[in-house]
Image 1 (cartoon, rainbow, N blue to C red):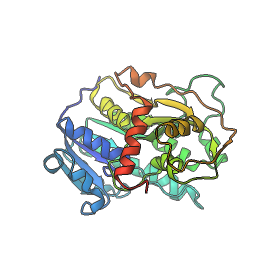
Image 2: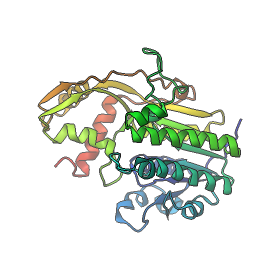
Image 3: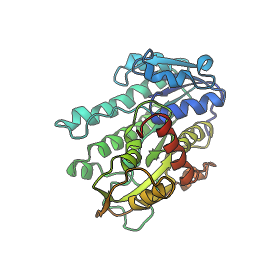
Amino acid sequence: MATVARKGKVCVTGAGGFIGSWVVKLLLSREYTVHGTVREPSDAKYDHLRKLEKGTDNLKLFKADLLDYESMRSAIAGCDGVFHVASPVPHTTSSNPETEVIEPAVKGTRNVLEACVDAKVKRVVVVSSVAAVFCNPSWPQGRVIDESCWSDKEYCKATKNWYFLAKTEAESEALEFGRRRGLDVVTICPTLVIGPILQPTVNASSMVLLRILKEGLETLENRPRMLVDVRDVAEALVVLYEKGEAEGRYICTSHTMETRELVDALKKKYPDYSYPKTLSEGNEKAVSLSSEKLQGLGWKCRALEETLADAVKSFKDAGMLE
């Protein structure tokens, strides 16, 4: 069983993003010293990190690129642990997905892990996605999907699901790298991450709520949504770092509902926004995912009402609903 040094120095890749910002905030509140990797530390879009409590004293931002090994090595040097949150997000409608989507995801993860070996890091928590879990046509229908299910790489290729393939390749490579090199690697697979934002820019998963609230769409597809609060994901990452018994991969999800139910929940509390006029029925079937393994480590999730209320407030405060 791994013993992880707590309250030491840790590195968060992609520190300025939606999930990364909350991970940094949580770690600082728990007395960690944090190295955060960003594209350009002097950029004003990372000011929200410096303004966090203890951000001036216990946070150092590093200019780093996942595909540049030396930059990752200097950010991770001297750290006890690493939270690998960053992920290259190239366009999935790619003419050359192998080079533009798959390779950066895998190479970026490999660079981080090599730097972790070099720094003698005690544990790495890698953020994957349920995209690496449930795209598997041979999984028995009706059976709850757990961590033993992996997205089928050949099926992802055949259906041109390049993002799913990239996440599957990167996560399986991370776990294999850990076994091969004796590095303690734990992975987490969140569903659609929503909730309040700390960063000043709109991220892809927050757009799901923003489109519902403000775009006045003629029609929107009614499809199953598996949701989890960004703060609960940050908590899960720290649980996986601190709990010695954590190992392997962990699904992280809280609420499954249809788009219609999500729209109704928002409308009920905020009736004055520009909601979709109609919802069309899609043919996507809900899958049943289990976070039981993560809950076994003491992880809990908050109520959806709290997530939606705090998300809408943060969008308002950031001027994103005007």
